[in-house]
Amino acid sequence: MTRITARQIAIQLLFSMESNSLTADETIELFFSEDHYGTLLDEDPGFQELPDPDQMQYIRSIIEKTNSHLEEIDHVIVRYSRGWKKERLSKATLAILRCAVCEILYMDDIPDSAAVNEAVEFGKRFDSPESAAFINGILGSFLRDEKTDETEQK
Image 1 (cartoon, rainbow, N blue to C red):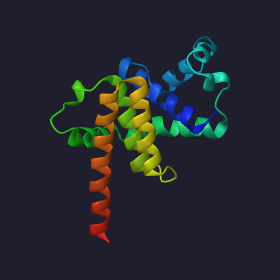
Image 2 (image 1 turned 135 degrees about the horizontal axis):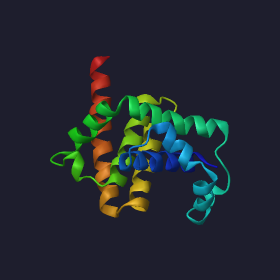
Image 3 (image 1 turned 45 degrees about the vertical axis):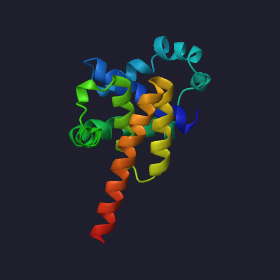
C-alpha cells in the first residue's frame, strides 16, 4: 500500500465521520472490518492489503489531529473559502480539505506541495474538476499567507 492509498483511506474516514455519529475509533474499526475492507478491492487495487503499521499510524495521526484541531482546521477552510459557508461544501471536498490542512499545519514530515497536489487529485477523483480548482485555490492562498506570515516573523 502506498502513502497515496493511506491518504485516501484517511479522507474516506473523515468523510464517514462527517456523515455518521460514530467516534473516530469506531469509524476506523468499522472501516477495517473484513465485511467492509474486503469490498474495497473492487473500488481500488490499492486495497489488496491492509496498511502496514507505519501507514496505519499515518492514518490514525490524520484522524486524531484533525479531530483535536477541528475548529482551527475548519476556521482555515472557511477563511479561505471566501464567501462559501462550510455547509455549502460537499462532504468530499470538506474531508479532502481537512486532510490537507491537517498535513500542512501539524505534520512536518509531509511536504506542503504533496499535501496540495494530492488534495487536488482527490478533488478530481471524488468530486469534480471545479472542486479540484476550488481546493487548489483555498490551499494555495492559505500557503501563500502562511509562508508570508512565517517570513515576517523571522
